[in-house]
Amino acid sequence: MATNPVVPPASALRWLGVVAAPAALALAFLWAGGWLTPGRLTQVGILDALREGGGMQPGFRRNHAKGVCVGGWFEGTGNAAGLSAATVLQQRRVPVVGRFALAGGLPFQADAPAKVRSMALRLMPPDGREWRMGINDIPVFPVRTPQEFHDLQLASRPDPATGKPDPARMRAFRAGHPWLQPAMEQVARRPLASGFADDTYRSLDSFLFVAANGMKTAVRWAMVPVRPVMPADGHADDHDYLFRQVIDDIHAHPLQWHLMVTVAGAGDAIDDPSRTWARDDRQIDAGTLTLTTIESEEGGPCTGITFDPLVLPAGMAPSGDPILSARSAAYMRSFFLRSGERAAAPAVTPGMTATPAGTKDNKS
Amino acid sequence: MRSAVSFSLPSRILHWLMAVMILGMLFIGVFMAATVGPGYHRLVTLHRPLGIAILVLAILRLGNRLRTPPPPLPADLPPLMKAGAKASHILLYVLMIALPLVGWGMLSAADYPIPLWGEAMRLPPILPHDPALWAWLRSAHTVLAFLLFGLVLAHLGAALFHGLIRRDGVLSSMVRRGSPD
View: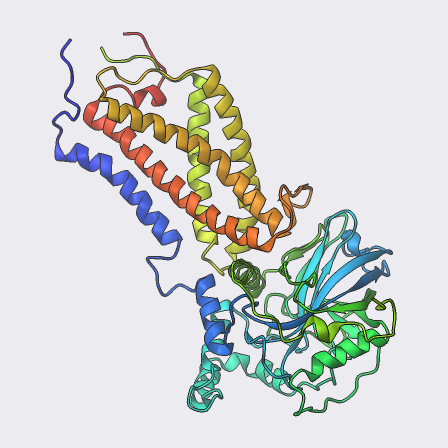
């Protein structure tokens, strides 16, 4: 038997056959990863736009970077249990880890009344079916797609010369997106509460509640403060007045919110967070949030997790709102990047959140 | 002439089933790691159970491989090529098992819940909550996935080289039933 040469002579066509399939797969792989389509919006593209729009600091969240950890519990009324099988909505108490923050990528920005405030929550029932959310004190989201979010960040980025957004760029964005005009006006003209404690935070995006029998109901929700809303007033002399205020508030007594679930009416836009819903929609008081503790992000329980709005329990599902998937993706990417970086000390330090001497159990 | 011994039927079924699953998984992974589109959440939801299915199949397949040895490579294949084949096969097995474990581990370290199918079944964490570990494992998951994709391409190229250029029966031993000639 004659031995074969290691590489026997073969036609060019056969060699093409050997190379073609791996090469085609490699090209398809590069396409799937976005490397062949630089114009396609990616997770990195969103984070780059956020950095240009609002700055960025290693080790901190890429958006809502200035914040403080809070803790407490949520107690369901059971009123929403008919719409959603989520165990977290049943009549019982579940522990909560949360976070108050200011929108924007700069963790050391100065507090101001008109800056967007957010509440993030992780509700942890004992069966592990947890519910995470990031909710904001604006009436609607200013955009309806990830691309519009990206473009708005770039349009509103500060001009290096003035430190303020270039009015011409913002005018061009508005002119190019007339359908966002009502939303942007509603955000600009919203009434401002005095602080984190008397603010109302809204899901903005819509979700589906799924009942035990499989019936789906489109909903939005809001955390509505129990305490009366006070008008906002500026504190130009204090860089961190909003955070100092909420630290004092929680040290003085627990803060409470009602979880108000709004059920979509016939004419409400489910998949467009830039549009408000009808005023006469059915409202359900689904439970009460009570916050009793506050801690710096340095060593606090809200730092090493992400409040991905698509971490939902059985009984809740995402709507078709395109912002939701983009948030989930961008939160993951931000959490991944910041977790590999070394963070500076946050603006709200452990010293600021320490219980005042002589009260409670802080005797050591 | 040539080796007429084929892989056993279970080996061939496992091979081709996993070939489709692993290629699909790699494409889902690289797409979802970049996209902010509406497919992101659906793909992540699919990526988890598919990864666990690959892990289970890979362990079954490793047992099968240890119990039923593969047909020998052609006797006239140079030792370097034989060594390359053996090393790449070992590395393929290592990655088929390691990638799902790294994925599971990284979600554990990030303190994400790990639902498998809807919310009916959740996996327990296999590592403690540790953000720095999550960041490290998330990077490792990407690097190992690229390595696995490169190995799959090399494996495919080598199979076609055996089938189209050397025509030595190596490709057909995984494609068709062996018949004594």
